[in-house]
Length: 150
Image (cartoon, rainbow, N blue to C red; front, top):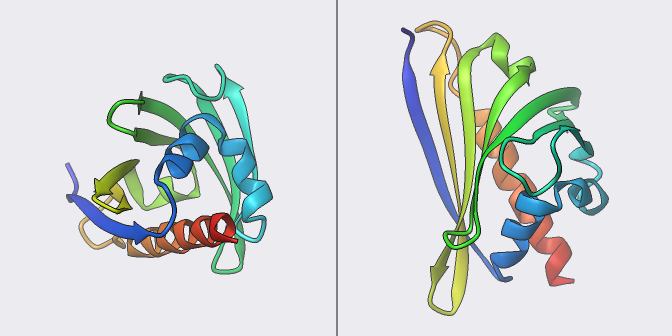
């Protein structure tokens, strides 16, 4: 077994967290219309949007390079406002044996926060940690927020 870990961030937002839960949970194909400079496409390969067990392929740009990632929707919980994806194919699997992403809307009184978790297992002890992936997720979250505040 390699090194396992978890990265977490909680991002306070000025817009309802319901937008994020709906976008990533049931309408991820709309994200490429909102932030086309980061996400270029999102399509279902198996199942359907908004259903656990569905396989979704993302096309995105990070640090000036284009990537593809295929994820399975592991969990979609309307009550907890939680969406969990597991990477099953893509460039990140060169460095990671496994990687999952969880979005959770956290009500904080008058505002909401978006909590992102990345659970990972590295392929080897000396490989990179997914900090640049988390930076991408934070930037993506801020871009979606800015779009909805307009």
